Length: 141
Image 1 (cartoon, rainbow, N blue to C red):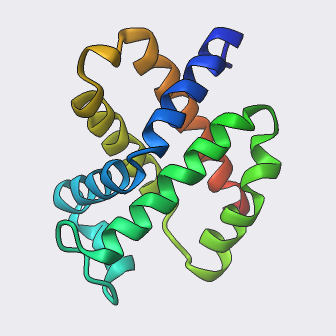
Image 2: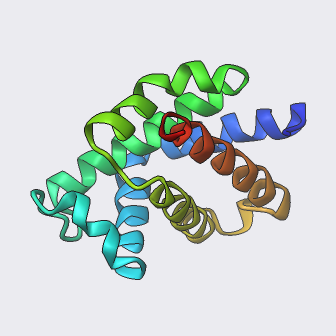
């Protein structure tokens, strides 16, 4: 799946993004809500307007979970088991939304990181987010 170099690169990327987790996460969520409006249904009880406390808080949680996954990529299934159960059994999130958010995260990273987000970084991040989404959706099977 991912080479040793790609794994190291992912840790570097997500450690950097952890420092601005609220910004990255909330921007990616806002992109998702704008481009895929049906995804808003899970957030009807929250204020998801730009820079709202709810959006910033949830965006930060997402980015920090992804960063944790990048640091523990060899045990991703174990690391994400609680999140997978939460999203499947309690929140009942459509697993397609994980893929949609992954796409929006890639766009957000490309915009924020500019020249730092090389083709190698993009490919590694895309592979990782695909694996991350698959693990989150495991409990749906």
